Length: 89
Image (cartoon, rainbow, N blue to C red; front, side, top):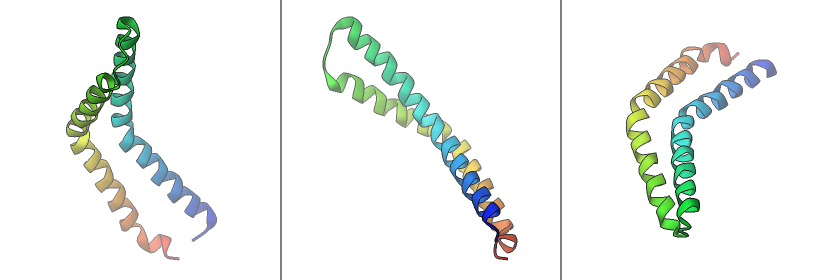
């Protein structure tokens, strides 16, 4: 295995981790910003007010995106294991 192929495998793994985690991060970010704006407008300083909806958004996003995430992980794993003989050299 050449250093270039090892770097390419690592790059693909990091990009896959990014794309799999992106839906959850986006959902948490959007809900966090919305509830932070509501807190600023209403001058409410309760930390549970933004935490509970953010956790609920993570759960909903996970349930919605889980089939897509699993398909992506399976295709990536099959691609890596399918080319295992190429990487073993």
